[in-house]
Picture 1 (cartoon, one colour):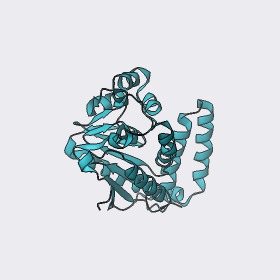
Picture 2: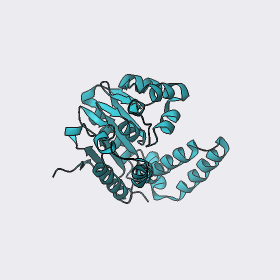
Picture 3: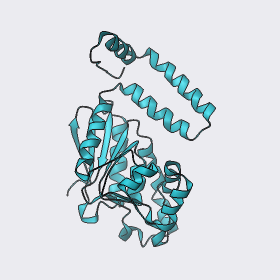
Length: 257
């Protein structure tokens, strides 16, 4: 049986995860959700991993949840799936996560992309939260992450109509970091990941941590967190190496210490 989530190491420090349910346009079912949870939990503990890229195929990043599986379930059964705990594992990944999005990123696929720190979208990509069209609503953070990404009025339009937006529209509204030709999506995402992997991993992780924590707090508390975290990096070997390399005009070698 083929892996639902294929892992490869395209360059030092970079892990590529490829969703592999092409027969269902990479729809999110229970087996894939469990595989993603286990894989992300394992990646969090791998110090040699400095950046993670997740992608689908040319037709779909992830075309939502598997409705065939969800259709017969009631409230109690859905509650017992503990889906929110599984999404939390992705949200808590300490390394930067980059989503390389081609084709459909709908429902859970759009929510998966929004768990990333950087989204590279293809011109032919389609982002959407169409849950309302089948009588439900987003349940993997879609209402909250989309609101924070694009603002109330754009989020409401997508959530209440279920209509998708293109890669270019996603970029214009702040739902994607970049939009590139479809064939360049994965190479560009891997290029970004490779650059991040070459930078000091402690500083990279602290930046991600502070940005995400500060996003949901007041400015004063966020600035305090930033300053205290900034100070802690001055005792790292990577800070000494980075500043020495700058003064000596040579490439730095960061070891994550």
